[in-house]
Length: 191
Image (cartoon, rainbow, N blue to C red; front, side, top):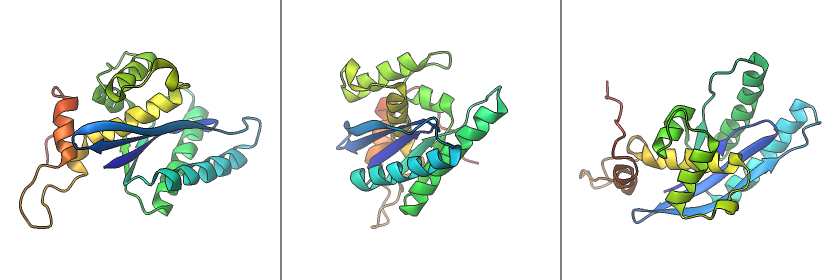
């Protein structure tokens, strides 16, 4: 399964692509979409959308995972971030891709970083999981996006069918990967 993770922002939007192959995590690519911060919000959103559509076409993921909104003290900042998230959701939907959203705390936990840990801890864990050099990630937006993709693979039990076309129960590769990535993770109870 190939997942494109998105760390939304109205000036910098991180994206990261991770693929699970035979139970191993493979880094496919990552980057940061930068737009002119002096441009009006509508123009920035248009540019973000166009650039993200190019990356979706380039990497051809099977799913898109987007980091959810966290609590802001500034309502305007939350609103602007919501617009950027909307751009990511729209681009994925236009590409016919399933979209999954994860709260920031769940993203951190899925890579082994704690709630109080900062972006450096997330980047360090992402580098560890994917075998990347410290300097290879650049801005935190890229490592955060890779963490979102890893989060989706970690929680892939919900996204991967548990019954194959033969009707026999099977445990998908993403579920096996999730077992290894976060043995302490407790799945929410089905209800």
